[in-house]
Each structure stands twice: as structure tokens, then as C-alpha cells.
Length: 385
Ligand SMILES: *Cc1c(COP(=O)(O)O)cnc(C)c1O
Image 1 (cartoon, rainbow, N blue to C red):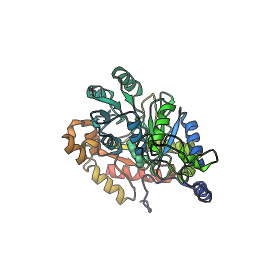
Image 2: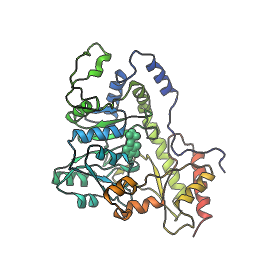
Image 3: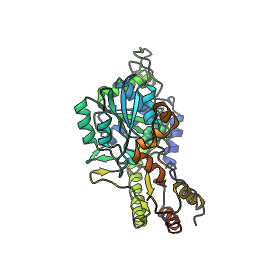
Image 4: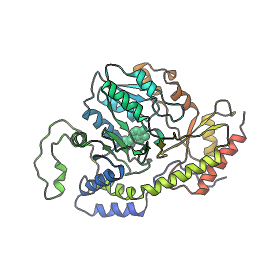
């Protein structure tokens, strides 16, 4: 058995990042300034985005985006039930109603059929999530958005380097929000960005920077002025140069990170695919996943133990795992406010009960992966129903 505990997704931060942070601390400008300008330019290049604004989280990006799109009381935003709570919380923040819909059984991404059934005259935005790094069915969503005059806002928290039909997530004109939280594929410890067409990003920048109508934060250089005006009551969501310093180094490493993630996934696939008790994650033919998460589901009735015991037993074998996610409609706030029952989104509810995320990050060695595979196999074979 493995001697040291294996975390399911620690960040890959190295000497390069540490050096950049130290150097930035020695400059006269440590918050939003030249490093953030450079990070935004680098992100724009990497994501092939029309325009980018860096912010202090993906949650901030989603909130700003909804404000930029004019979403407010009386409006509805369609959100998948299988996501992190922030995707729905931001809809509450602007006083609108999140309509929580079910996901596809294979990819656990939002079901276009469920979206179609949920559209009402009050619907304003479709807010799909590229769950675990697998892209959503954008063509189907585009068609619905066009027919009903809706905006699309992508929750791309998991989706840096994800491709839909060959095209990078983040390269479209609609707004997409990325996360650089500590557990994500690229991290600035905390942070995020919005991508989209220039006019939407310009507006989002103002909303995320106190509502200041010019780049008041450009006070760091000679071209900056002391003068600014507030054109709306914006938010304090700027990214600091300390974070951008980390992000610039991470962006240089992202391709190597992604290559390693794909190798780990291939090794899991080879080591686990013969187990009938497990349902492994899939990639549809038109999809290139960023493989943010490796979510396996226990096949109903195949084992004598349930998901919670499975997680405990893996922990006893020094393998860390997690669950992504308790569906949003099952959280007390949403359940009680809107009267949701688990079976309102049956795929999300059922999958939640039998899912777990195995360790997946760029720092895993082949031996680490083999330890996970061995522990999972032992557990399966000793608990067959
Ligand atoms: C992590 C995450 C977020 C929030 O990202 P932050 O940068 O922590 O605000 C939003 N949506 C999903 C799906 C996430 O996984």
C-alpha cells in the first residue's frame, strides 16, 4: 500500500513562479499594473480570445458578465444542476432566478433538450458549464439562443485549453469566465478572467473596477492620469500583479501541464477500463477535454459498498478523492427557495450518488497513478456484489 497520502489536486507551483512573485514584490507597483497588462495579453494569445479582462476570480467574472448583459430581477438564467455553487449564486446576486436543469448522462454537461424545455419568455441567458473540462454542445445552444434572442455566458472554470469542434473555449465573441483558483488547471492562487468581444470586455472591465470610466489603475505608468469618473457602482474585482506574475509563468507551462494530464488519463483508462463496476469518463468525438477532473461513477448494484464507503476505503489506502458536485438544486438554499426535489434533475441526482473524482494533476508520477489504479482495483474486487 502507498505510504504517503496522495492529494487529489494540489497546484503545480515551482521556482519560476516563486521568483516572479519575489521580483514583483520588489517593484513599486504590486497590484493591478504592468504584469496584469502582460498577463491579459498572454491569455488573449493563448486562448485566441477577441479580448480579455483579468479579474480576481471566476465567480467575479460570472457576476460582472451578468451585470454587463443587463440581467436583473424578473429574468431567468438557465444553469446546469451539476456544477459548483458559484454558477448559480451569481444569478442570485443580480436578483435573477437560476433555472437548474439536468445534464447529459455521458458527459454530465448541460442537456440541450433540458435547456429547450426550460426556456420561457423571462429567459435571458444560457449559462452552460464545460464540466470537468468537457465542452458543452455549443452548436445546439447557439441555435436555441438565436431562436429565442438569448445571450450565452460560458462558465469556463474547468476549460482552459478545452476545444469544441477544434475551436478553443474562450475564442468566441460571447462572454466566457475562466478560473485560476488553486485547484484549477492553471492557477494564480485566486483569480480568473473574462473573454469575449471587445465591447463586452470594455464594459466588464469598468464594472469590475469600481465603475471607473477610464483605466484609473494605469496610474502605475506615466501615461496614467489622476482623473477618473464613476459611471456606475462597480465592484472591486481587479487582479493584482502578484497574481499575474504567477499566471505568466503558469501560462508558459500550461501545454506541459495538459500533456501530463492526458498521459495520466490514458493510464487510468488503460488500468481501469476492464472493471465493469466503474463507469469511466468519456470524450465525445468532437470534443477535446482539458481533463480538469477525472470523474468515475460506480455502476448501480455492482458493488456491496456505496460511494461514501468507497471514498473512505481509498482514504484508508492513502488515496485522496473528492466529489464534484452535490447538484445545485439539492443544496438547502436552492431546494428550499424554489422547492426543488432531487428527482427534478434525475441524471445529476443519480450521478452525484455514485461519483468520485480520482487524483488528477500535472504533478502525478506514473507510480502515483499506478497506486491509485491498484487501490481502486483491490477495492472493486474485494467488494463485488
Ligand atoms: C472553481 C469554479 C468556479 C469558481 O471559480 P473561482 O475562481 O473560485 O471563483 C465557478 N464554476 C465552476 C464550475 C468552478 O469549478
